[in-house]
Amino acid sequence: MKEGDKLGLISWLSEKISGKAVPVNFNEKEYFDEYASLVFDIYVREMAFWSAVNIVANAVSKCEFKTYLNGKEGKGKEYYLWNVEPNKNQNSSAFLHKLIAKLYRDNECLVIEQNGQLLVADNFIRKPYALYDDVFTQVQVEDFTFDRSFTQSEVLYYKLNEENIRKLINGLYESYSKLIAYSMKAYQRSRGTKGIFKYDTLPVAGTDERKAFDALINEKIKKWMEGDNAALPLGRGQEWKELQHKTYTNESTRDIRAQIDDIFDFTARAFGIPPALLRGDVQDTSKAIEQLLTFCVDPLVDMLQEEINRKRNGYSGFSQGTYLKIDTKSIKHVDLLSVATAIDKLIGSGAFCINDIRKAVGDEPIDEPWANQHFITKNYETVENALKALEGGENGEE
Image (cartoon, rainbow, N blue to C red; front, side):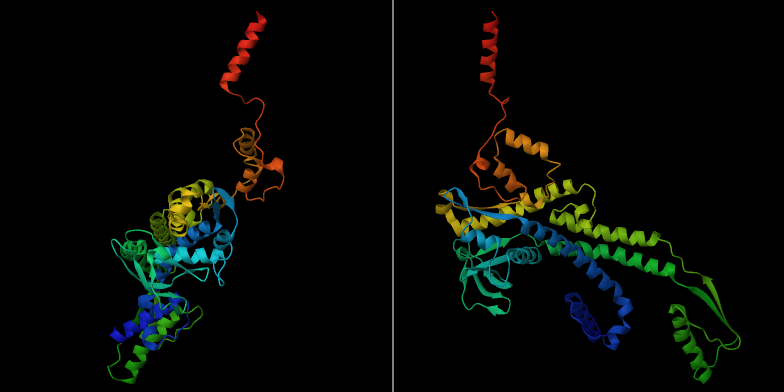
């Protein structure tokens, strides 16, 4: 393949992945079958990666960013900024999806505040320092580039891992994709039609008969084998004998599917996501969500809220009870009937009031004084009181 053809094919693949339609020139179409598996490999890799990103982003966007002022929970401007409208062009869900996507794709993410709006930077250059604030220049949001620099104390800067997780996944997939390509080729060969073409004599080279013979071999037989409904024109002394019919078993496709599932499993483990959840399996979903929270979402939201608190509230605010806390309880769906006994125990033990329970299950609190009171069942008492009552009863009997 010529260098220009390779560049053209790479351009076509790039445009195809980005979702833009581009024309395919003759050279690219000529080599399309050779590199069709490359397109498939890229799509499988991208699908696994972005499926994992969407699971994490959807989970974080369901969280409530609770704000506290002087130790008391409140819903002021800061609450509205994180839970409803971070900026004029995004709601909180779209904002968090972009933040998480940038974080996993680039292994780092920058959030700036401009005119009271929170914005996720699309591009930036970071100049690190050991003892002074890092400096961020050429900060770009959409198609606008700021002509000023930002210091570390002015922004929210997140770094996911020491190594870019996406590069590690791609490196692992490079070797594994060869197995998938081999399985696909084996599957195609197993479904192909093979036969013997018999002829009496081979026409002399350079004659019209030889040209017609070559056309029959190179074009007509191939089209006839690939077509759903086709006729094969044969001349005198020519015969086609089919050796093998196409088989439609599922064995080969299961092998390919299993290898694709392996790619999703590798990606899930890199993200800390239960593989069954990424594959869409519905068995033990509750346990899978608990693992997702423990090993993926909780560490991520800890990193998010720590950066928010140290930059937006600082030590002075934190020491006075002013901070932000990301509540992950809303990620897991609560079936009230299945947890009714547990709710009764929580209220009856005095640990939670009715409004605490309503908030935990996603309902609005009741604006009544009794809904904020703590209740305890009569049979709950201290060991000391129980012993006194027992001693009193024994003395009375005597």
